[in-house]
Picture 1: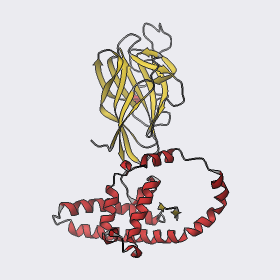
Picture 2: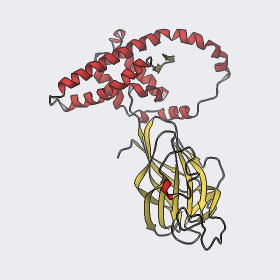
Picture 3: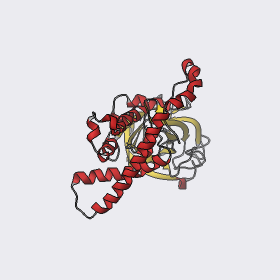
Picture 4: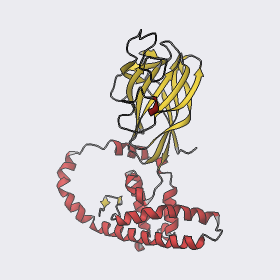
Length: 338
C-alpha cells in the first residue's frame, strides 16, 4: 500500500539443476523513485522448509564475500511448503527487501531439507539473467548444503564442494515501486517528457501568458498540482524512462552539429535569464509561505488549505536549492546551469 506501481519479473526456466539453495544479486536501475520493495519470491521444486534472506548492507558486490557469514544477512521469510515441481510457489516476505536507485543486494533462497531436489535453478547463460525496466537479476551460485550458509556439503561432502558458481535463479520476483513526486530539487531526475510539461506549466506564470487559464492560479496551486501528478502513468513515459537508461548513440547529424553547442548556449541565454528570475521569485514566495504558515499554524484551517500548505512547504526547500544552484531546469531544448 506504500507503493505506486506493482510489477512482476519472471526469469527463464530450463530446469538445468535442483538442490537446496540459490544465492544471487538484484540491482536496481538509476530511475527517479524513492525506493523499490521486493515483496515476494516465487520458487518451485520439492521445497520443504524454505527461508529467504537478503544482505543487510548494500555494496556493489552484493552477496560476494558474504555467502558463509550469516551475520551479514537478514531473514525475511521462513515456512514449510509442500512439493511443487510444475508450478511456482509464492513466498510472501514478512518484511519487504528495500532497494534505493542503483543499489545492489544479495538474495538467498534455501531449503533445510536433505536431498538434491528442493529448489530448481539454471546454469548461467548470460551476464544478466533478467533485465526489465526497473531492475536486473544477476547470476549467482548454488548451495548444496541443507544448513544455511554452511561451508560443508551434505553427507560428508559426497557431492563435492558446497557452492557451485555460474548458476542462475529460476522463479519470479514480485516488487513495488514508490516513485518520486515532483519538487524543484528533483526536477532534473524526472523524465524529459515530464520536464517539458513542467516547463510549460511554470511558464504560465509569465505576464505574457495572461490568456492561459493557469495564469490565474496562485503559485501555491501550481506547485501543488505539479507535486500531485502521477507522472509515471502518463502515455509514453515508460519509453522516456527507457531512453534515460539506454540513451541512443550519437547520430552522424548530431556529431556534425556538436560544434554548434556554444551557439546553442547563446541562443538559450534568454531562457536561462527567465529561469533565474523565476527561481528567485519561487524562493521569495517560499519564504513568504513559511512566514504565513507560522502565523496560520494556530488557526484550524480547512482541509483543502492544509493539504496545499503541506505540499507547498515540502517544495519550498527545493525551490531555494534550485535558485542557489542557478535554476537548473530543462524544457523545449533550453537549459541553464550556474
